[in-house]
Image 1 (cartoon, helix red, strand yellow):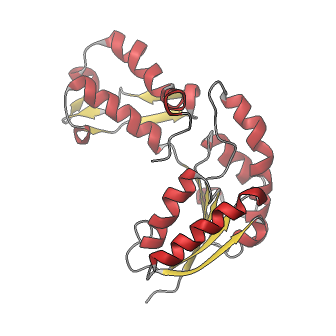
Image 2: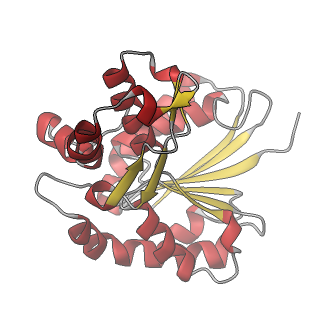
Image 3: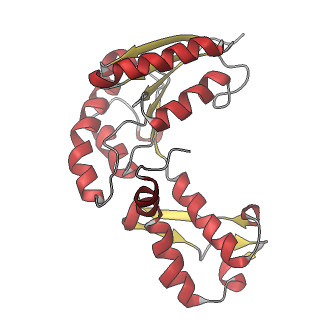
Length: 240
């Protein structure tokens, strides 16, 4: 059996954290033979709800789960962590802009960056999920000078998936036929979904979808504003 790795998850009591934690414990993230120890960080008022998640982790009897620590102190959650997944942040609500999120989340990621710098393992890697993820990642990174730049990642995969799905629907093919979709920029309306370098069924996307007006006037804004549309429809951000 391999030595357990420690994985810290912030916002562990939220809907995204809840969806993620059990996959990590089951071996779906780091592999079916890699034991993990979880460091779960939440704000103090959310600790009672997180305690319910701890009960569920116990009840799941995950063979790979070597230990769990729940805390409201970042230095404890990040202590000797090999991976830190920054999920927690003020959730985007209907009508909020990227600038609103930055103002609210900046202090959070400043503090977490300092805690990573002071407490995480020497070879820690950090994945930023909370949006705007590129900006939040940069804020945390700028306050963790001990951690090299190549250890920091920002997850824009959801935007990439959204773009691929829209192209597939327009072309009338399965989404698996769409390749090489790239999202440039940040999250939300500041992003640029790149269809020019994408392929559909092995052919350049602009050769398959020849409707230039749709690509520029419908595709790009649909992908860029998809998060806002989801929030408006279900009253909360995506968490699946």
